[in-house]
Every structure is written in C-alpha cells, then in structure tokens.
Image (tube, rainbow, N blue to C red; front, side, top):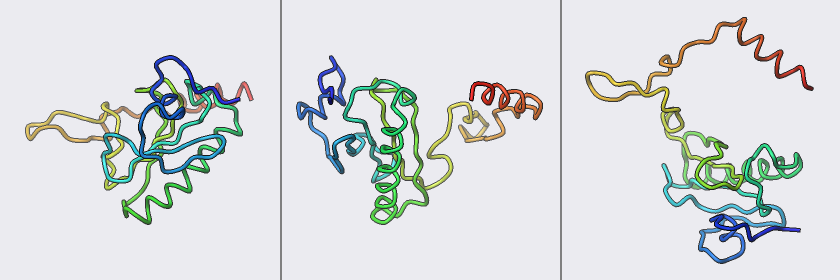
Length: 150
C-alpha cells in the first residue's frame, strides 16, 4: 500500500497531486521530478512513493529500483544536457522523505563538502586537502568495524 498522506511532507503532497512538480518519471514504486533550485540544468530527484524518511530505511529492492531509475534518467540527462558527469547524492536533508538527487556536474566543485572550502587572500576556494588524511591503520580499523556485523 502506498502512503501518500504523511503530515507536512512536501514530497507526499507531490505524490498525491496536491502540490505541483515537473514530473519526469512515475511508476508503481517511485517518481522523479525536476529540482526547484538546480545547480545546473537537468538536476532532478527520484523518490519512493511510500513515505520513508531515511534512504537507509528503504527495503533493498526499493532502493535498487530507485538507483536503477536514477541511472536510466542520468543517461538521459547526459544525452540532453551534456554535463561532464552526473553525480548521485543521498544526503537526507531538506525534506524528511528519502530521495536520490541527480546532479549534472560541470566540474569537481559542483559536489563538495563545506569542509573543503577555505578562505584565501583571493577569497574562497575549494581545497580537497583541507580535510586531513585519516591514517591507514585507522581506515583499516574502520573497515573492520563495518565488516564485523555482516
């Protein structure tokens, strides 16, 4: 059963037809529509029709369906808008409804963490080395923690 009526969810309002959206795709499990404030032309998002807040709470088959839908739409974005690449972002902020953002990229600065922004005499710039390297033994320990519950 599809749950369209979560209180105050902008995406549920779009799904139910109570709010406008520029819909690109809709099937029985997800829909995709254009982002209101795109970084570059062609930016869109794919959302499940079912109201689920966190992307990590999606059932695996639904997450896979959303990713495959995003991949197909990403190819279309490449064809139509001709970006250098298409980035796929799941950050979980903005609307408390799982969503996959497809972001047409012109350069590496189009998807970047604020931690990479540094102040210089000339203004702000992206500096990937602003985030310190994590030592390999720590990374190995992190990986082991992640493997331990498999």
